[in-house]
Image 1 (cartoon, rainbow, N blue to C red):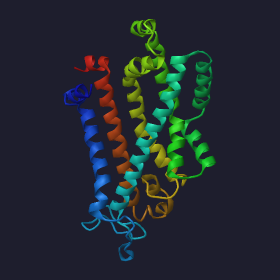
Image 2 (tube, rainbow, N blue to C red):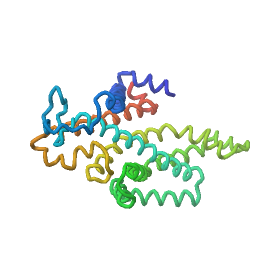
Image 3 (cartoon, rainbow, N blue to C red):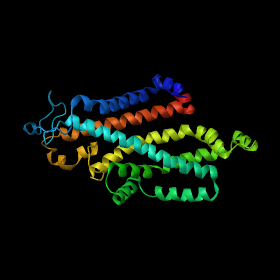
Image 4 (tube, rainbow, N blue to C red):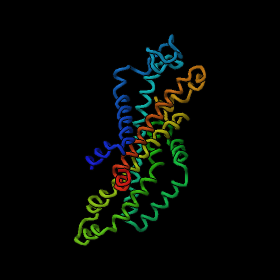
Length: 280
């Protein structure tokens, strides 16, 4: 399956997905390696406050004399970490709820679906705001709250896959020969439902990054660097005199989300046979 996905990304029809992978891998590599090469983002040079982009500071400096490039790299690392962590948490919660609901059925299915309906009645960002307000602002709280808020969609996809697969002939044949229900769930249901489910989870990474930036912009993501923090706070008082303080973090956030979304589109085309057939 992995080899087929890689081959699809090399075709011209999936060039957008390849570009997305290139952007995402580049940003991740810079976020991980750059701090060792460009130094700490907390170094302050008061004599160089609010300097524009130059050969010394490619993205300029902020009101405290900190190099903006270092701050953006540090903030991008946290945004990426939270975005992928949110996708993992939402996939874990939604996968467990959806599989239990679709495979077991009965009153478990009824209760689980009513719970998911209640969660989907609220916009995910409003639900995340409510959870963060109760738990308290921190990176862990943001990750958990967004993971819970994003879990209904993966749960629905997992349930749909479990309901359709459990009615297949090979599942019925496995039951007829006395196969263990857990073995059927792992070997047949999860294995065959993994494709659409992974696409939905991957598609939530970009939205999670934007949501984390929104919460950071509002000051609800705790202390620490973030692209949302760079776009808010005291920076807004200097945006007219130093527009690079807004422009470069915004462009970085847009590039990250664009790369992740293009990569997800390519993954969708590679996994979905129908898309392959009409794209080639």
